[in-house]
Length: 139
Image (spheres, rainbow, N blue to C red):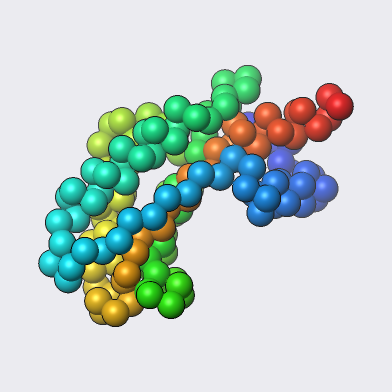
């Protein structure tokens, strides 16, 4: 599946597309308190991921995504981060995705309160990137 991404020119083009926001959807949530309810926050993030998945393209059955999670302080500095790697959207309907999100939030709670003002999520769709690359080749 990753064959077309192996060439240096294609990797460079994919990096440019991601930096331009192609295939990337983002959202943010605040940490309400030092002892907030991670279960509620994790469920909210999972719900957003599911909505975002509905907006992705799946050319030729390519349906892999990566979810990046980060915690940042009030100054905007990232204090901790993690990512799922390339996974099937089914991950976020099986409980596995919720477990990954909950695990990240538990780790983020180890950061002092001053260092965790908000959680930032970015979902990257491999299908959207392939669609854009195919569209450019056809043009």
